[in-house]
Image (cartoon, rainbow, N blue to C red):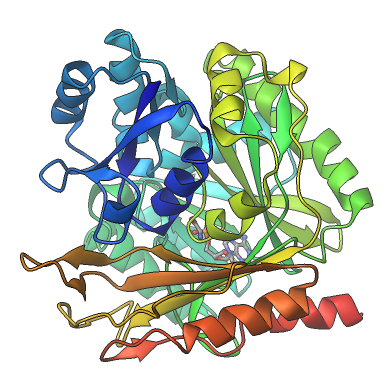
Length: 427
Ligand code: AMP
Ligand code: GLY
């Protein structure tokens, strides 16, 4: 029997943990830190945060961990996988050098340019004066990105020179995203449907997962501020088999080869954020990890045992494994705290249904257990309600119906998750 450790404590980690539990050889799963809802499926250790690498490694050593999964970007960029490997613990996730594909936009843009991987044209600046001079010659809208990790918020799309100057000032001078803004990328504004493709890779072999579509803006009709993601559907109807073939040839395999050539083969889950432009698919961003809430719609459709896939990635035998998927569709509706992604209140008591239909799962993202055992809200995104069904229409209907059965003060959700996907299906 195996003891597993999962680093992280959101809806993505809850989904990974529920899926790992399906393996009959799993004895105990520890979640560092985990959350209130995860405590029903794993042993949570709220005292150890996902960025506390020394404590995570000590914990793994003292708890006879057979396999670890490092899910969030921060610990990956901080070298959590490198350190666990040094301690002799097999794990899933890229090392720090490979995690730069997400942790530094300058690194990933230069990689794509050098290896001819399609992406938006761009310039890099470390001097605000030069960035401002460049913007005077640019056309709008344009895209300004902080180099480093910024909780998905480091991308600004100014519509004119005045807004662009404000963007550069806020990132480079006011340090709105801290040291992440020491360098910036200014890039061409692309248009077209967006697709997220997560892929298992052991550095050479690749097994793309079912495609998905995120809904990043806080409000219906894609209005309001960018969030971590307000809902997802899978598969993404815009991602046809022909586009998948083009992406494999022009983006996925060249990216893996580029990382090997740079001496940092990528092992783990590589997330391709793609835009299907009139000139073909282009990379908007890479993430070095599972997406949140993409994971909540993608992993429920995985037929092959997740732990087996993760072990094949670690052992570099993925090419010999047939990674299979269920047909059908999944939809996830995020229940957020009113006010998210800005100011919101915490500590609201959660009322959950006594049971949910068999095809519905509540993935807990931002909640905690009180001393007397009640679940209360503790974050912006509180729950992800996922339904799996033969069609996207049914999955959305079931997810929204189940979302209605959860109550907490200030509960906020988008009412149009999947609307664009359904329109694309109807074509
Ligand atoms: P990112 O954090 O890099 O995923 O960017 C957040 C969002 O900004 C993306 O999901 C896109 O909608 C948008 N975006 C980023 N780069 C571009 C671009 N070059 N052109 C148009 N939109 C972009
Ligand atoms: N949902 C987007 C992300 O995980 O980056």
